[in-house]
Image 1: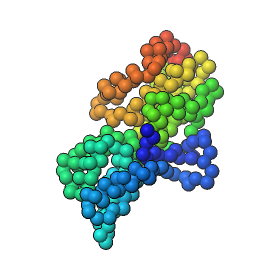
Image 2: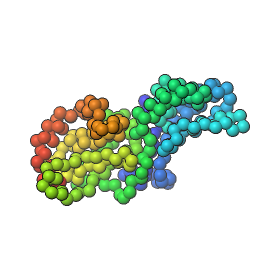
Image 3: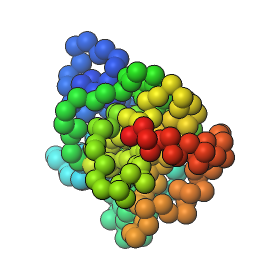
Image 4: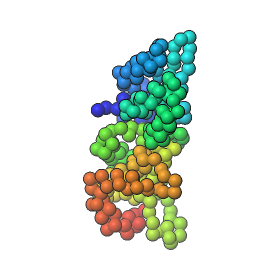
Length: 253
């Protein structure tokens, strides 16, 4: 089933041309889903409701009454939320229910990755390398493992940096994820003809897990992330390839 609300990639950072589309964050809303939630609120209020679906950065739910009409604004994450969350949303807006407020808070925390980036990406993104196209890798991994629902994460080859000291030459960070930018950076040393596509896909998959799984204080890789990482089709093959080729990767950086 297609998502009820999706964020369309910023045309300034996508390889696909979007002629005539405004710059900046854009969202697509399933009007039928919006109207269904609007009618549900009207039945609970007993008065007209105007429901707007937003892509706000901080305020997830708000409502005001204007001349007998309730104007409600909710973040796009709620449009396709589970039934119990939508019911809690109605109870919170209509009656200010404290239990419903707690459930909504938990839902927002678990879906923080669906809130748009708090800091825009600066500088151009480089997705097409000499041997691998990261845009194609990201699209494939998103479709296969996330149902295409991760629509606003960007990817780029990182900058080549000079190692600092002997210790730096013994380690290499193959990928990273910036939550504030919604941006995956992949080490440029992986843009080699001898680096298999499945290994690059594994790196991107791992960084996407950082996007969809909330961080745990004091733990860079919480148990849920480590468990879901094994869902990658070529997980054991990718780990074995990295161990076998780590010395070669260190030389490539």
